[in-house]
Image (cartoon, rainbow, N blue to C red; front, top):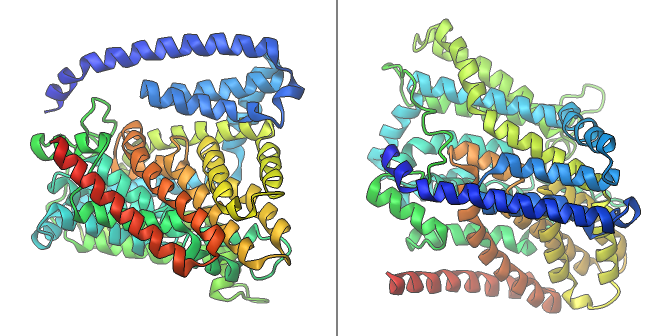
Length: 547
């Protein structure tokens, strides 16, 4: 099947390479034009600050090649920052970009978490836990709809952290979805849609902690976060949309082709780019049981929760914080590393004691797990470096000026405007948390003590827009990890997810317009849900008519 698919798409590959060359030539011309028309002063704090990530995103979507596209974006940012100086470009690109990103303690913690989780997944596969769970689940889950609904429910239940969600749900449900011939692109969409969208409406999560930390001048950050949940339309509508399209068996856009190939041909990847196709081709123990997957996953969840509240001061002897406060003060990067490390120790001991794997076989899984995470780690490193280029050009200041300027008029439309700005900024920079950090303090300063309702609604719009942009962006860390969790080609995941995300964003935008005038979730939320379900019905009828 693999050879057949590669032959089928060999012409497309040649077209992609040709497109890459053409786009690169156009970029060279644009950069030369930019060298003539811009200076450090004109590039800083202007729209030019968002040009590097936009170039990377557009190039990745056109050429279907993510590594070189991200690198071109980094190079563009360095050129603009250094005023096209060769020495300045090289220094800024590596010293302030790639090296600085890999030197950041938070980023290193995420990379360590990725590696350890990759090792645990490799151990579970080698021990036969994943295969045993797949067989157990297939006897109880009787349909493709059931497998997809089970994936969504598991994703909703793992609401503590989006990174943890992406990789855990993928490793648990991949054997099940493969058995029911669900494409890797569809699995990646389900994982991604239950990561950030669920975390952003869960009061006990690393995301709630981040948002509450950005509410300056208020000591009730978590309480404000809870008040924003009914207005977080994009997150809520994403969950509604997932269940609707799964139950109605509706797919549209590029996803329809991926699902058709998976069902009719058994091809879970569709395109020749399948970086994880041979990831599971390892020797599997015949002694594995369902417990060999469930126990490590449960231990991982417990240890990660303990690790996060530990970093938030829950176990502080002198002044212990309560559970909610500990979460709001936690350091997700360090906490997840602690949790995953002890989860790894537990898993090795479990398999060794049960004699499922020998100690040597457990140690052989370390390089295997590391290798499986290399694509995600490389994309993450480039994405972080690209964000550093954007920050150095003053993207935050430019967007802050746009929001403050919008607040002067069109007050009832402001939530919808903030939603669009947050979408664009998060899409261009690939970070929800960075967008929170820019927009939420501005929103609070504008409305604090003036209009509490509008402040909560605008905060919700900011959070929803940030998640939406992050959901669409090829350079988003959550999107990258969802591809890794589903073991899907990253560009396939992005290209199939965007039509779904944009559809949900459109409904959310219209609902924010309604909410801006009514200032009531009781009125606006049901209208938005009805619009979302109605759109899915429309797409189902349209797909049926087209076929």
